[in-house]
Length: 334
Length: 265
Ligand SMILES: Cc1cc2nc3c(=O)[nH]c(=O)nc-3n(C[C@H](O)[C@H](O)[C@H](O)COP(=O)(O)OP(=O)(O)OC[C@H]3O[C@@H](n4cnc5c(N)ncnc54)[C@H](O)[C@@H]3O)c2cc1C
Ligand SMILES: Nc1ncnc2c1ncn2[C@@H]1O[C@H](COP(=O)(O)O)[C@@H](O)[C@H]1O
Image (tube, rainbow over all chains, first blue to last red; front, side, top):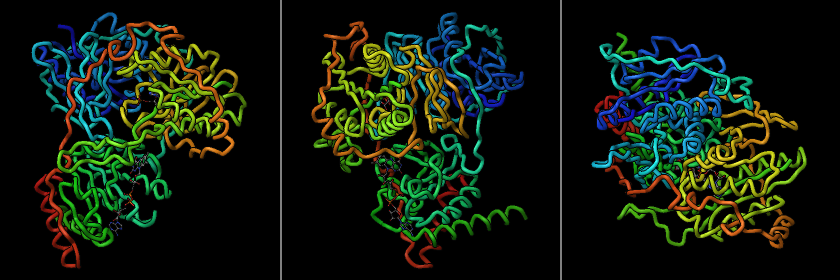
């Protein structure tokens, strides 16, 4: 049986957590198929320890492709590397994260590999009998779940929504092979040059990979009131999100926007404050594990889908929640 | 500079309502509109045209209703429109759609830049743009939030990624997909509307395109939808009223207990 592959992600030589989430997905599929699980890691100067961590978290093999010219994600070069690997090793399944790089690389690669691709899956399974990969994803703004398969083409390819699965615990007794693939000039696409990277510390949040998201909407009345949201998010160890109304009013930057024309998130906990719960906003939060809503309007749509809703004035409710959290923290420190 | 903008016709989503009984999407009487995220692609193309000169061609694959989307785009200031339409294209997945659109782009020819929306709000895959680029074997830059400059042979741009912006220099021709942050779309003008009304919109079909018959439509698509389910609309959650000061205390008490039970605090 040919192997299941996951495309590990790294930044500055450090593995991203989403790589471990993919391994836990891949492990389940490989076990069902009684096949092997490989992690493909393209980058530069990724340490031996990091590669071993891929093994400890589920990989049987790691294909390591390291080169200074592959340090940053460049779709065309990464696709060339992978096209070559696919030809040599013929995996049956390839999973990547539904991140800005995964969602660029995979559709580019799927054409080169002459196969289908399913975007942004939240569930993966193996079909009884055929061994086909069953790929389930939300569509039409999360209003339906579609299950898709790729019956006649190999590999079967899917991107998986970050945070939609939990990484496996590290198991230091696991053994695996690390296979270095030499980089040749023909793997590098000369048409694209990375000029730099601008990290915006003030306004950047990795919403898609956060466990907890506290989001504010038009009910906050003005931009300064986002301070309250930021403080609450900080105390919970989460990040700040927003509705489009809040973004369009300039209260907070676009990278924070959640929904149809913003980001789609699947955190463990989402708290929406002063957000009505329009269908476009819901499209981005439907796969959250727990939804909490704070809104003064008892009829607000977000209350209807929330696991816990408080009908009340955010300016009374949020400071009270904050007070309790601060109290607990003090209590815990004693 | 010759720019091509592929736009998709999608069901208008601000009107999407859920049937509370069955939990299904009420589809009847839902209008179709230009994929809202494609307006940012159109705006980007029109601004580049204003800055550097050239033409903007808008392209849509779909049934003849897609003409409406094309006319709307033309009314904003595009020069040409092409409808890619044939019964044999029906049911195409992103592999087959991007193949068909890439063949249409080849037929148009002589382009410098293709600009797509970030994703379509119905299928929501964001796969068609990179797919077209791959078929054409040109470079792709997705999630573009800013264009620094365009020269005869290159474009310098910023891509919005998870924790910042990646700055790339890419040779032309290439394909980019843009995010909302790039520009706010203009409205159609009266002059544009008049121009759109009288514009002849050619139809590309299996009759006049070079196409591999086995790559078309549902039959030519590697993926198959096997099941569609409607997830539960409500989670059977609890809503408490805060009301007065005491109500707030009690509501927050209950919330804290809830969060504790869920292991969050
Ligand atoms: C094509 C398209 C794409 C879109 N994409 C997105 C998207 O990606 N993301 C997105 O969010 N929206 C999107 N929208 C917009 C969407 O339709 C809504 O307009 C938007 O989500 C509403 O934001 P809101 O909930 O903050 O504002 P509102 O709908 O105005 O809701 C504000 C809420 O705050 C409550 N409130 C007021 N005062 C208080 C108080 N003191 N305490 C507590 N609650 C209070 C009110 O009861 C109300 O429910 C899109 C729309 C279109 C047409
Ligand atoms: N049928 C189509 N006709 C023209 N352009 C399309 C079509 N489908 C997708 N696109 C383009 O590809 C982008 C991404 O769409 P999708 O991959 O469907 O999410 C859209 O924003 C459009 O610019």
